[in-house]
Amino acid sequence: MSRRPNDNERGAVLLTTLLVMSLMATVAVEMLDDVRFGVRRTANMQAAAQADAYTLAAQDFARSYLEAQLKTVTPEQMSQYLKTRPQTVLPFEGGGMTLRLVDRGACISLGALGGSAGRRQFRRLLTALGIDIQSAANLTSVAADWIDTDSQALPGGAEDYVYLALDPPYRTANTAMQSITELRALQGFDEAIYQAVRPFVCPWPDGQASQINVNALGPDQAPVLAALLGDNTLPQARALLQNAGAPYTAQSFAAAPEVQGIDLNDADINALSYATNFIGIEARIVYQSVQRVVTMDFDITNGSPKLLMRRLGAESGYVFAPKRDEDAQ
Ligand SMILES: [Ca+2]
Image (cartoon, helix red, strand yellow):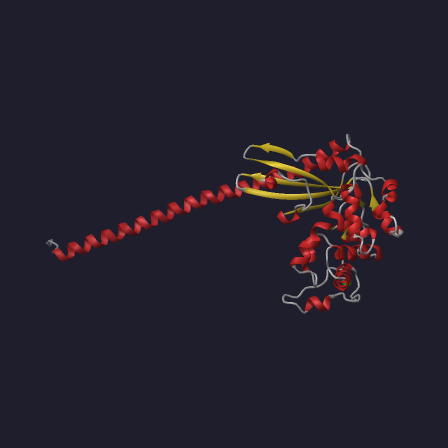
């Protein structure tokens, strides 16, 4: 025998129904949100993967582009060519690639810190950047200790025992630096010093002496030239680069009035160059919302580009490079 539900029971059914419906609505909204984010995440991953593919392609393109340039421009003409050459833009669907070429004979080699000439040039660079003589000497020892294979600290230097006391502890690399960013790990290289030094050094392979193309330097790169000319030669270096009219040759540079009275030794003379030896290519890839930066350094002393270094990431970008359009805005 059935029974008619009373008013209280009908209210309970209604409430339960409403509760279930609101729960279902919440679940439906959550599911829609999940789908929406899933679609967005997939699109982002696809864009990142595509940008990575373009980054790989950029490296091949950069090398073949450089090979083509080297067929028409001599190493002696190259530094002028690089100063005046606008950036190369390659648009593609959804984005584009910008190549900037720079003369990389404009920085002191970190790979030369194993030798006395390399250490002397690095120390002079630091003093030309305004660091006091004692600190410059200590920082040079610290950098040399970082790459030398022994664990005997140079005067003012730092070996494993200094870094093992840090939190977190780490050891010296005991091999050539692979990146300028390694300087950040060194004792005494704080942010201000790192940012000051960064534009003027190159992480060349172990034993690679500096090869500074005088004709590639602008007046704001005078500290690099001063590092070769000698202690306290920043004013002369700046004047040499400001007065530069026609590109220097070994003869015209030696005859310049600013150089008279400076006693250059052989290692420093050998580090001076008047043609392009190293070329850096910075490729910036933009695809949809993704950006990639890759820099490649090539040795062109044998006529064809030999890849020395390749780095990914925004911090790998060249500080001294032809201005981009957006820099001027
Ligand atoms: Ca060491």
